[in-house]
Amino acid sequence: MSSVSSGSAAPKDLKAEGGFHIVTRHPVDSTRLIKGSVQKTAHLLWAEPSRSVRLCKEIEPDLRPVLEKSRNGWSLQYVKGETASDMEIAVRMLEIYRETKRVVLDPISGRDPENGLQGNFIKGRISTDPTERVFAVDPDLAYRPDSPVSKNYFSEATRETIDASYRPHWRNYPATLKMRELLLEFQSSQQEEIPDLTPFLEFQFFLILAVFIPQYSQPQERKTYQQYETQLKQAKSLYQLIELLFQIKSFLNIHCLPNKKVEEALRRAEKSLPPLLYCKVSLQLALDYGQKCSSDEEQKAVLEWYRETRLQDKTTSTKTTTVSSTSPTVRASNLIRCLYHLERILTHQSSIWAWRGINEPEPYKKARPFLEKARKILTPRDLLPLSEVVLLKSPPSPCLTFAALLGMKKKQEDAASIASRTSSISISH
Image (cartoon, rainbow, N blue to C red; front, side, top):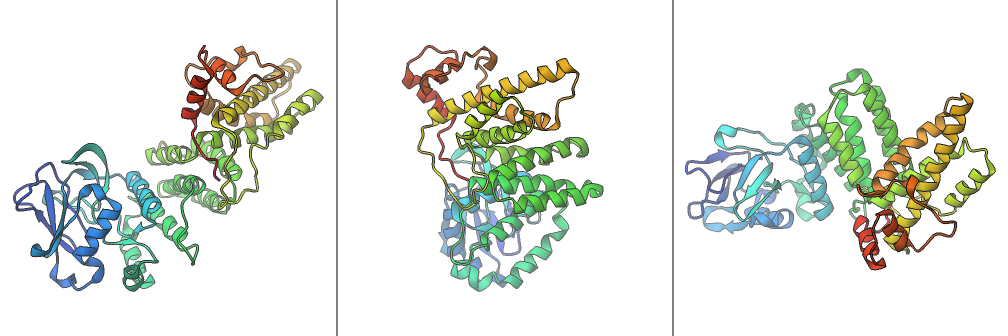
């Protein structure tokens, strides 16, 4: 199926025909399109205008779909823009699943810009909203297995036919088509009810995209990328996923040519996790690596105290949701103290090894990226260097700690407000 890109007013002579619709400018409102059914498919229930209107209201209500019975079709807002990029389509598909539990089976369609044909996902603006974003403008093949229409008309054989039509596009749209595959696999993973996405799964999906995209440009490294993909799919905890993330980043830095799609996939992955949750797991990884080299009794005591905070349960299932009873302010304060202690230990040990002429052990080298990531998450730009922070043996109240670290002399409620804005999350795996 195909759709049309538009400005605030559509060209008067606009006419584009896709597999199931003829698209023209609305004869009364020039900021809208008319999608009329092609006669040969008018009998198909999933192509009925009434269903298209219902799905468009569910997926893209801002397009204001209206049934046009007198014109044997339906109308929607005219979108000014261009076909969305590969990664933009993949991201929008994931958002649609999160909001509606539907997978768009035909994210890529034929394009003919000279005739106004711009595909099924358009990045642009509508006349009623100046905000630029990605719109899914053709909802007919938005698949949901518990829908009667989907059950009757989107059989496995039909979906395989659609799949076959997209195989030639894999090289140009790897992120879109891989996201489609992942969502369909996940959608069918439970028979009784359609599962919900979690931050864990979104993180996992984008990491899989990051190792899938380069396979077409670097066939000599394909086996390694495929191994990473298998490991990512088998991971059962955030601890495992974040550890794999740093391994993948290291591998890509060495072997992968600059690739904007890969970089965007990694950024999207990291953004999908609540900041404090990401910080907790990073610090736990740093702790586990650092503890392998710790021999000093005092350091062991600090590390053991840190472990007792139970920052991360490495056996947590992907389907489990755990909500912390402590406030974001307390969690942030505890993490800052942990970060300070670990950095102090690492710096102290490194100076001893340097003085003795000993190379820094590998576990400590591996611990550093996790500490650096935790620091970036916890510390705003105006945060005082942690080396300048005086940490009391008996820690002060969390609010005062946060305010002191920010270099502010404000009331406790102000500090609590800052901490809440830094991470107002529910801790979910």
